[in-house]
Each structure stands twice: as C-alpha cells, then as structure tokens.
Image (cartoon, rainbow, N blue to C red; front, side, top):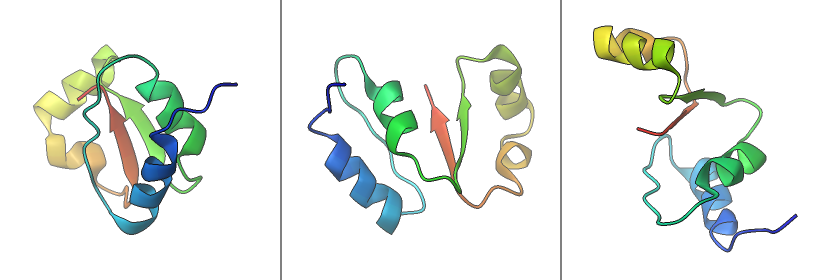
Length: 74
C-alpha cells in the first residue's frame, strides 16, 4: 500500500497534540488517518448524517467522555 508523505507528520501530531486540523489537498486523508490513528482514539466522520446532527445539536455532548477523538470531514 502507498504511504503518503504526510503520515509521519500525522503520527507525530497524534503523539504530541490533543487536537489539530489537517487541511491538505487531494485524496487519501481519511485513509491515512484511519491507518495511523492510535487505538485509544475514537473515530467519527461528519459525512455520517446522525453524527453531523449530533454535533449540530450538542457539540460538547458529542465529544463528552472522549479524551482522544478523530473527527473527520469537519
């Protein structure tokens, strides 16, 4: 499988930062994040309509109880 050049930077960010934004052009961002995310981080995508509705209704509640979370397609 092709490894994107940004993945080593993502791995470092996951280790040192509780939150960050990844704004990159092109395709493959979701695949890269899913492949390297740590096991203790949950993953949600706002492409999922129920998740998007939950964030719109109660953004704080959406992440409550999740110390480490990846939110894709923000």
